[in-house]
Amino acid sequence: AQSVSQHNHHVILSEAASLELGCNYSYGGTVNLFWYVQYPGQHLQLLLKYFSGDPLVKGIKGFEAEFIKSKFSFNLRKPSVQWSDTAEYFCAVSSPSGGSYIPTFGRGTSLIVHP
Amino acid sequence: DAGVIQSPRHEVTEMGQEVTLRCKPISGHDYLFWYRQTMMRGLELLIYFNNNVPIDDSGMPEDRFSAKMPNASFSTLKIQPSEPRDSAVYFCASGWGYNEQFFGPGTRLTVL
Image 1 (cartoon, each protein chain N blue to C red):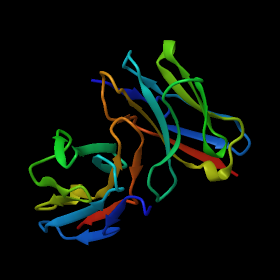
Image 2 (cartoon, rainbow over the protein chains, first blue to last red):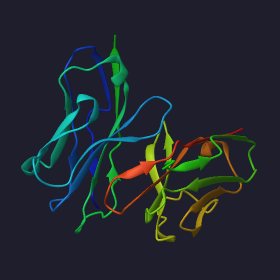
Image 3 (cartoon, one colour):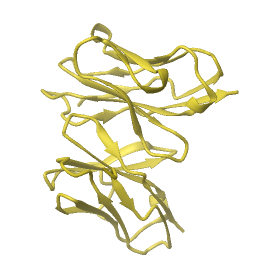
């Protein structure tokens, strides 16, 4: 079965620090990749997604992610975090051909940004 | 579009009582998902439907849990009887297959 790993369970940063959250998946075929954000007390919302094309994807609020097929990775980055980025971040992977057709979610990474 | 609608937003009940959670997906979406989120176990997929048909219910924890989707615009998740360990936030999401999912606001369930 397809799996998604988010190795950083908890990340604590100061404002203006750079952020990189790891996401690795197990399926070797064609994949669609997603990052979702869940602000405290709210539901999951899509940050960005990758289906094809430029492996560097830009999302909302200054976030970006890079798909590296050879490493089975889709890491999320932001050059300078803000206090308002405090949230839980989920990586998800689906495969339209083989693997898991519907998105499989990672365990999530909790990000706390100190002002 | 109003997005995915869930009701109630909060539910407090006593152990042994029946609980019914409701979801209205976004019109046109052909997949509907039920998730449970807890601090201990994170986000768990309970069951999902495609065109109103249950496809995979392997995530449903026990026979006390059941889900239905009688039509394209409505789904329920029922717990009978409820237990304190069922306390969690239950999310409904809808989407188009392998594409992104749109999550509802969730129902926070507390079983005393």
